[in-house]
Amino acid sequence: MSVYGLMRTGASGMNAQSNRLGTIADNIANASTVGYKRAGTQFSSLLLNDTTTSYNSGGVETSVRYGVSQQGVLSGTTSPFDLAIKGAGFMLVSASDGSLALTRAGSFVPNGEGYLINSAGYTLMGYPLPENASGPPVINGTAGLVPVNVTAGGMRSAPTTIGAMIANLPAMADDVAPADLPSTNDPAAVSTARSSVLVYGNLGEEIMLDVHFAKLSTGEWEMAVYNAADRDANGGFPYASGPIAQTTLEFDGTGQLDPSSAQSLTVNVPGGQPMEIDLSRMTQVSGDYAVDLINTNGNAPSRVQSIEIAQDGRLYEVYADGSRFASYLIPLATVPSPDRLSPKAGNVYLPSIDSGNLRVGVAGTAGFGSLESGKLENSTVDLATELADMIEAQRNYTANSRVFQTGSELMELVVNLKR
Image (cartoon, rainbow, N blue to C red; front, side):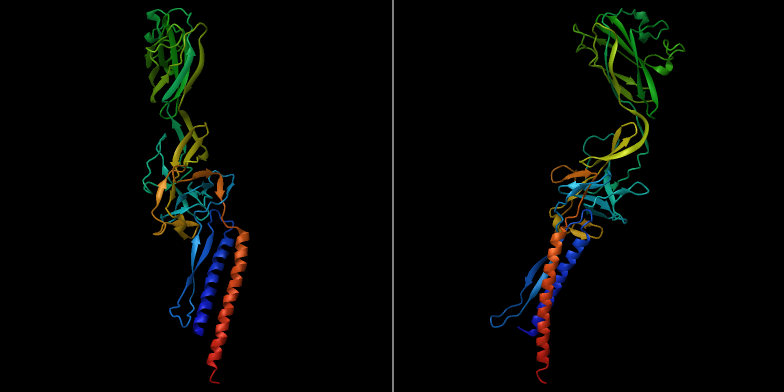
């Protein structure tokens, strides 16, 4: 073995321990960094010995591995924009140049334009959901992703499209003559029972409908719906225009709606959408007219009051009137080998040849964890372990420096042999 080889091996050992100390320093510095994954230095021997008569010392090589797949402890916060992943997967974020990256650092806050930005300046990406979307969205890789904006909702209204009515019609009421039925809209028309229903038009305007019931005969009733805005000056018949919907209800001997009877009624709401009223639970028994339920959907214009993010990644805008609309789906992404992702500044990762191709999906489905709102994933660094490793690396560095020093002294001795 040459003296030069001895020095080269000592230098290789010092360089390896220096790399290890570098990863330890990074880990300690990022012990409080949200979503940080601990880095570790792996050693492999480098052998140069190719004879049996002498030994040529080699050295050691290092490679840095990140425990990207290791789950950090989740801690609760008070912000619904803080996101953590419980299980596998990464959030998709965009840099200022528009390039996509993966991260588990979910400390997002809205910027001045309402876009969710994390502490490293990356923007959260999601799929915009169409109005009243209920089924799973179509996910095609990263195509269609847009920056998530939590203030773009503005004011929102929804027209009435469905309703339900549960009421009892008095079985002992007198029959109404055909000429006096509500559907005739005659000034002398009468109704056995009447209710008003509040619905909403296309612009969120309130529209009042009058619902009239008149007994035709035992077990048979007429139902007619008018626009309350068309009432006579005295508040009733005749309306300025005829009924906007009408039907006949038939009841069996037990007072329940007969299967052959109309079970619903479609009402063309003035200035709105067709509304289907469910009538299947109407009854006709002895007693007074009693309304148990009149319920419709739709709402007047309202502003966003708060934001909710579900475990499947749907972002809901909650309005002042209590209505909720899903505006975005925040997807998750993964790769076959997360530990081989390429780490970049800002606590983000990029796919590499070793990590495999990117796969995008919905949180909570096969292969993906759940998205937890109001939580953050802590760093996977354990300070006690890092401090112990630092002491060990320091001692190893000192030992390798002693090897190099010994080689240097021997080299000096060889150089001074002629003196």
